[in-house]
Image 1 (cartoon, rainbow, N blue to C red):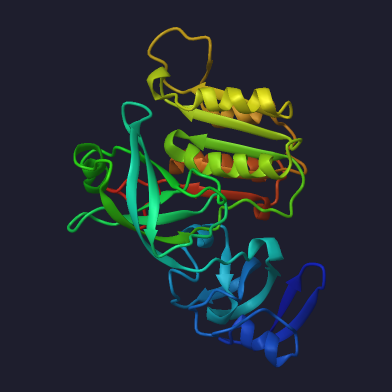
Image 2 (image 1 turned 180 degrees about the vertical axis):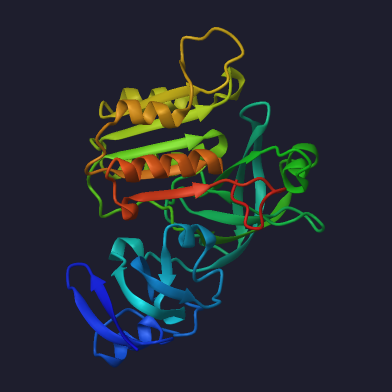
Length: 342
């Protein structure tokens, strides 16, 4: 049986396909140009967005297509079989950034508590660099033998020499427990990366909505600082959702940005305040919806607990923001997650 594959975008095209053929093979056989390289699910060059259709995704490398990208309906054309009419959209050049993969030895140069359960680590790269990444991406940290490797987002800008990470203490978490109980300044560890697709889209010049839950402020800080460094007049709205007053951090940084950039605004929302407060209360997702009934023209960057991320994604899509304009990282605890970003 023959089906039709439609390629959407600036240069739309279509191609016939038979049962079980891959999208990439069908397009290339029909003479439709499409980005590709290895054709075996390892490089990610043929990554695209599935708009609609009956398909079957074959196994592929986690480095070519991560779980967070799958959640955004991205697929690998070379590893996706066609079983019905379908439509795909090629990624914009801004959505296909690639940086060299690095395995680095780093030294802890600063280790300070931001809250009762969030600690900031500053690392100097001693070997294996330079480390190029896009604001919003993350890396895997291996603290010591026997301690599980975990993923944490870079909080620093890509042009800064040292790396900074926010580590949240997770109940019974081996990695975060080690950071809070044993890791000290001067210690060495390995860092590999970069990873992640929820990074700043540099070609977008419109307004930015940045929403962080707790330690999700790490990638959001990197994104916001990088965006404002490139365009100090950029409209940026940042929301930070935490449980209680003791969970608030980086407020001086937020105030400094607001003073330096009139087009930047921030909102701190407490979901479970233990006492009376002058701050906004409730869910940060409700605050965003109340303040922004229209999100036309925005790029949204969201990082934090999965319920918050998933709820906000649904709300933004319902408000008319295209999926391709929502870039999100859900931070899972070590107890829940096989691919932990924290």
